[in-house]
Image 1 (cartoon, rainbow, N blue to C red):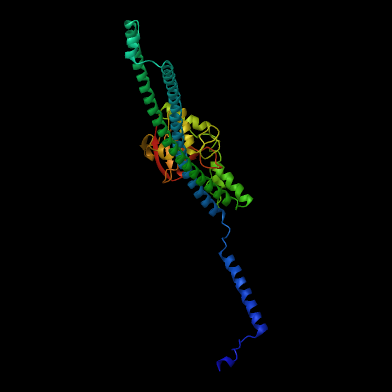
Image 2 (cartoon, rainbow, N blue to C red; image 1 turned 180 degrees about the vertical axis):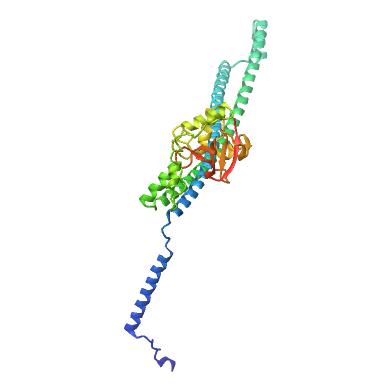
Length: 362
């Protein structure tokens, strides 16, 4: 009898049901819109932008120093590979000349088709002359044997050089891959910083860039500017007060760095038209006749460590826990350094960044 039962009726009939469904969908869509709006990231304040941009630039500089180190290793691997390749080419040329000489001797012997020595002696009309020629032939054979030995030795050397070259080539390719990776990291951080700065208004961006170029740290609303900018606006122009370096080399290094004031920061640059931080200190001490390694984390070990209270003009001063920034101390709590993109080489106080250590070179 169940088959004849009427289906249970919905409490909402035809049109009413359709209306309810429509309202439910509309309500869900509205809720979704508001939910999305509620989770949309609010526009960051200028202070938040500055904080995040500073963090990105610090990370970019740390990646820049890793890039510099990878580039230095890649350059060494490339130079070693080129030396081995050139030496292998020279050895191969010498080997080919020796082979050609042996081939000419062998061809001459084949053409002469010389008889067995015993038969030649039996047929000759002048046994004494024959014996003299045989002695000369034996000496010639000795020289030929020596030539064969030399060819074999040269061939082994060429094979060894080619094997070493292949190893250096693999090393070079690995270093170049690391170089590309670090370059992508730097560019990613810088692009992220530029994207954030683009969210500032034109007025906020102008104030930010002017303050960064002058060395300012922050105005009343969190964007660098105001009185701090005025106080620091002349720092890239000259060194304040008398400068007494401990030795002639330190004086030369500082003089070189001072001559670079106002030049732009470019990551990976070592001069003469632009610098990154370690590129500037390396160039300054090179002008004074001292060779420094390329990166901040190797420069800190290039001399004698000194405490902050012992600082003297010419010392290298390092910042951040990762030793990712370096400047050249000039006395009076100041340094010359290449800060970051958008900020030229300038004079700045060493207390504007977290101090990590100092090294005396020269």
